[in-house]
Length: 528
Image (tube, rainbow, N blue to C red; front, top):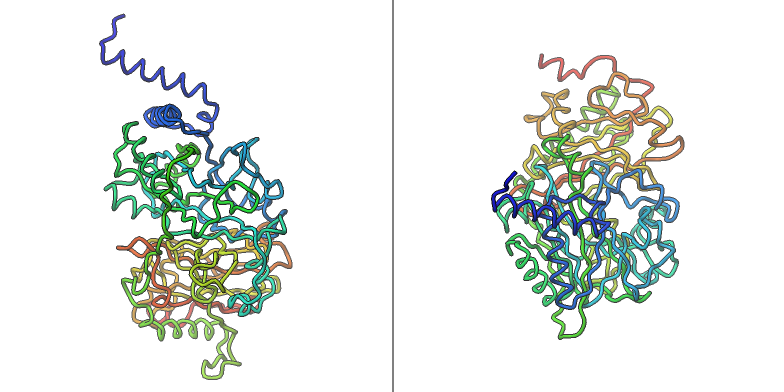
């Protein structure tokens, strides 16, 4: 059989990729498309030829199933978002890099000689090569400072303002190494699907490349090497790690970092699961020696002020009306003018505003009196609201009443997560597609109930379906409390979450589930 020259070239190319990949055992951990694996091999060969030291890592999923590791070593699970698993980068250690064994299981298990937390040198870059997932509501990649060698600052204004000792312990606690505090703090803006679309004109299913470094010269060198490997420079995105914010180096006193991806609510869940199963990503650690440094300055966060499509403060009266309608439905003797006659209602609070959850602030920039503080994986991509601790073991039904950001136009997606507390472990996410339409049961109370939701959380959802999540003891054991967290992700038309001053905080209402209404709300019956 004869092969044409083009076919022979293609066949030889495929064979060469297969042979090269076969010599690299980590190429089998994350199966890349042949064209992407070829770029990874070409990039590595070119960089090593130029004198750089190169080591390959891998990616793995991290979900609530992995919470057993940080709960065992730290006592909490970082406030994970249960709407989707994370993808976490795992890196080999340099020979001169300190590896803190006390943090070995602070996230999860890793392959021998690898860890998810790493130190970054001044002449080092991480290069991520990725085939991005199928279309979804959200994709983002970001680096956090994970822990820092430091001690408690009792003068921190947030430390002084937080009265809940359990929450204070999470925000200001040490790592498994008592000389280091947990930080989990962003260092700048994430690179999300909107940012990728804006620079490269396409996102989903595309090959894109990410460089994480403290040095502009290294960023340029990595981009040039990627171009040589056949990559369009517009497909390369740089995350700057400023040495004025992050303590660089490989010694025990240096900060350690983590890099992770969030991919949520794919348009086709089966295709999304297939991408997660395959994880067609790889990561290279690259470092050089000598030459002048060109350090990045501290990046500025995108300004959220005024970043809404609809000012929800206009709906404050309507939110109160629905809140009171729910309370009167469950307790007809409730008179909102006499608060003591009604089931207790408490607003969630904006974690951004009340706890100042902004990574650079948690790291002490620009106010040296702030921090160190655990920022529990903050991101400018979202706005967060947090509830008080809620009991559910004595027949309580928790009603959560709020504005639905996807319907007010202020969120690409909205979710309510149920979190075990004080483990701060997300166990269930109720996304906007489940919240949508839930306030229709109170039609007639407000002009447009579609902008609101009324959703119940309870041990027993009898008579409350479909707008209720039943919390089994396998998820939240007897005796534990829960916290509800609302997240509004990426205001449409922008690259970040909505302005928290223009978004209403939801309300939780503690209802007596032993005495449930037996008929629909009078408002919905009247509308039929």
